[in-house]
Amino acid sequence: MTDASAPPPPAAPIFEVREHIDGALLPSHDYGVTGQCATGSGLAPGNIYAQGQSGRGAGLGAGLGARAGLLMAVSPPTPGQSSWWGVRVVGGLDLALVYARVDTGLPDVTGQLCARLESDGVGVQYRGSTVLLGQLSAGFGAHLGLGDASRPDAWHGVVLGAAIVPTLTYLQPWVTDATLDGSFLGIELTVDFATMPYGSAEENAKRVSLFLLFPPEDKGPMTAQLSFGVVW
Image 1 (tube, rainbow, N blue to C red):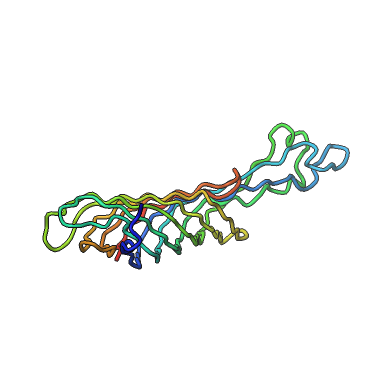
Image 2 (cartoon, rainbow, N blue to C red; image 1 turned 90 degrees about the horizontal axis):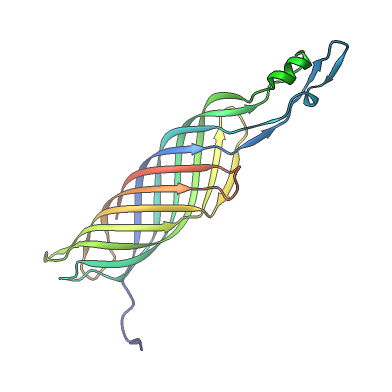
């Protein structure tokens, strides 16, 4: 039986600012063949002689982000106790500029020979473009602290974290239309080099994190983020 008079686990608001390196695989698009090609005796729709294609851009960039939430130390650090664990709920916003190779569609085949179109096909066109990448996220995860509880002032050590992070992703290339996609398949792994007062959830730390977002469908965007920040 649990002790109903026992105090609840200590909790504290947590904040984080980070800078990050971002990689993005842009959403996939299907393009149809447009225009009429020359048969030698007239014109015919180009899509009779060539199939449509799929295009997908990709890029790399950097940005800034912020997090705010709540950390609850279910088993807070105490003198002589080297390990502890807790849970966190956090919301975040990240903005980045990514330089990407962006797919812009298939060229119009008007004026081409149908026989040449049939033999060579038609390829997706790409352009280099800056892309605004914005992500709004909400994560739930757990912490495991491993460190030194022999000091009289506070616990010092490394905190390992893992979280599930559903995320909305906004992508705005300069050369094509914007897209907005949501995915529940976000995963974040963190390593904190932290200090915590005994018996509390007040963490002060430097953090390294890796965030991976996978699309729920094959055509959706995929992103990866390596970040460095401070937590308090």
